[in-house]
Length: 228
Image (cartoon, rainbow, N blue to C red; front, side, top):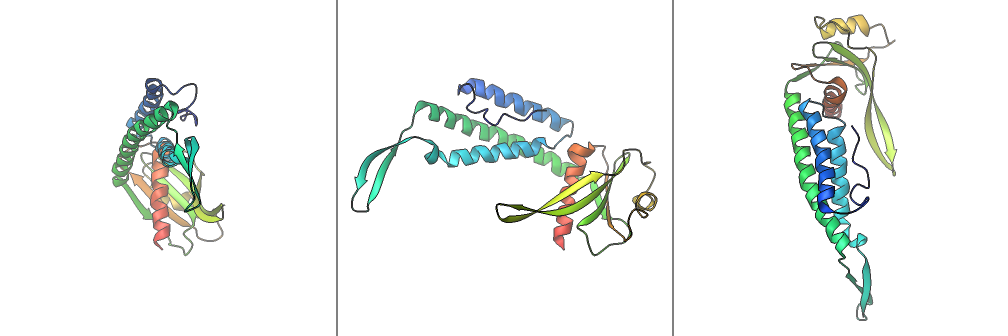
């Protein structure tokens, strides 16, 4: 499913009803994904769009045209008056409407995430190692997939961030009757020279691995790592 165009707000025209249709059509498609318990990347996309629109609204004074109307000689300041042209008034109306509708979709997505997380059990499997920033995740519903994870550092504009990377090392063909300890013994113990941290997550309900299960477990894992 495609994201909203970055310039959807101003592309072609700023007719309110037309833009309302574009936005509601997109949010309906997002909600259809939510109904199938497919949460990501759709929730993240909505959060990103919400933040962008909010920033745009907060930068209103920078975006509207201004004209010099007088000079304050006492304080040595130039006095500008903002010109509220019809186009920007319409854009502002669209932004406020979009923020309300997107916020509702975000809240629904987060609610679904929280409810799914309640049905997930998350535990360490086997030996607890000193280094928890690299290891394996065993995700199980009716079947199991093993992912390798690693916490990496990311430098953006001089600021350091942590980013959790994952890659699958099996397909969905591990028997549902195997315990996480058995899976670790069978698939993981021989892979590394030193013991690696392993976590297991089990969902009572069958949910999409890539769109929902893995992103939620990654969120749980990040909390677990940061706890120490």
